[in-house]
Image (cartoon, rainbow, N blue to C red; front, side, top):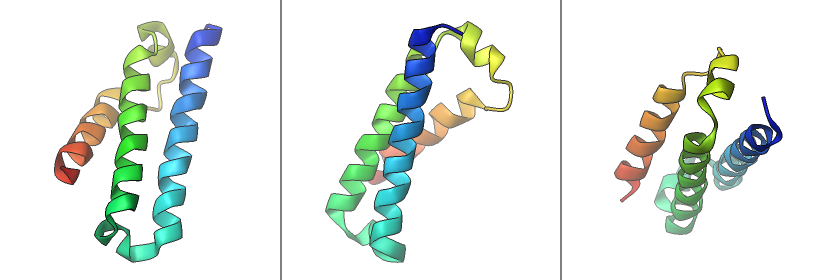
Length: 82
């Protein structure tokens, strides 16, 4: 795996942590807060965009991640939020 892929994967993890943190801070009612929904949507959008940039070689090397499922889930979440 090259440095660029590593950077993308680290950025994916960072954006996912931010989204989870936003939801955790707001608690169970985060869906009713438009700013939190928007912030989480932006982080999920970033995850999707970054995941598309990871090389196929790196994706195969990380066998425990369902990348297609991840992208589908991100797209579904973004669609539901709009």
